[in-house]
Image (cartoon, rainbow, N blue to C red; front, side, top):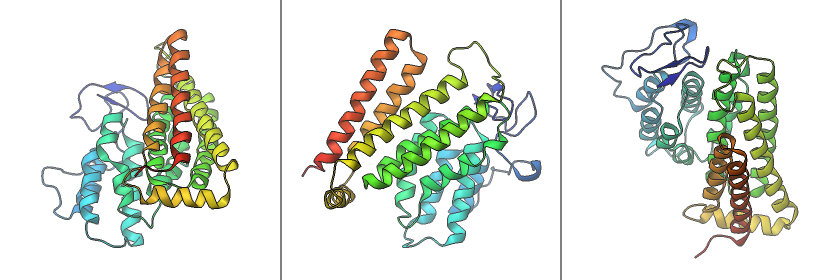
Length: 286
């Protein structure tokens, strides 16, 4: 099932590359060009990743990019730009579902380019593409992909001061998305929470995370922040990131729940954020 990023129409046939309602391709293509032939994929993994991303096969495209980066100590500007362009284009062109995004393992791809800012750069590109959205549902689709990346930044960045900066930018970006959506129409009114409700929920979550991180930064000395950042960077995995992910999941579920369930889910989500603060400040174990 695919939702058109242009008109919002849902198409049940996953084999189609275009919307049966408005005729737009599901993946943004320069000049309205036809989709590439995928019966024979390129042998070069970088080219293969670009092709797969162009037809909306996000997780497979990310896997091809990881293959292309194997054994590369550094990534040149041209290669990095191609990856960012392909990832951004795919995220703008399809209604990316949570499982498809999770299967791509974007944090792992980002970690293979430690001298780059993959997640943040794609977030910036998405936020700068609001003008392609002509309905509220399109803004929500863009915000969904943006939020996937935002949550994953906590798997990459171990310095609370970096987290604070990312949260501040995300807050501003989500506010801009909400403002943009308010001037557009909802293509599917009356079917549960609308795009504005979802966008408001995302905005509130980012602000709650920002408040948590800002309290962490304000309550620590520079020396302790440096120590924690270094300790978490050396850890095998940042366990605090799971709590941010859980908090986002619970907050998202609360948007679709009844009043009582919504309050319970939000309260549990806030507990996860307090746990994130506690775990981060305690430092990695072992």
